[in-house]
Amino acid sequence: MHSFSFGELALIFGIIIVLFGGSRLASIGKSLGEGISNFKKGLNQNEEQKNSLLKQQKTEADHVVDVHVEQKEKDHTHT
Image (cartoon, rainbow, N blue to C red; front, side, top):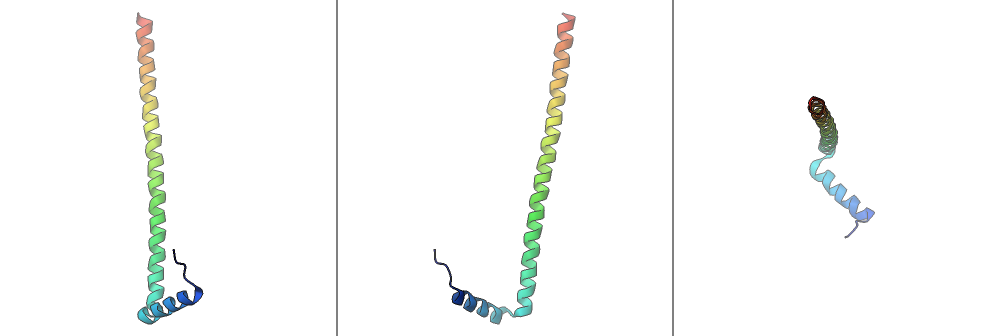
């Protein structure tokens, strides 16, 4: 893969400034930063939802096991 030298990067950046202008580049950078920030927030919220769902499923599974054990104990006591 080709890596760019400092001179090449400066030339590319200079062309971008001429094409878009400084103020427009600032707004593009701000929008890009906000987009990345919102993406990270979305990932964190997704992780929190997943953990909450797993905790709820574990609680429900534990309840089912408890009911099953209680039923077996009742059946065993009555026989």
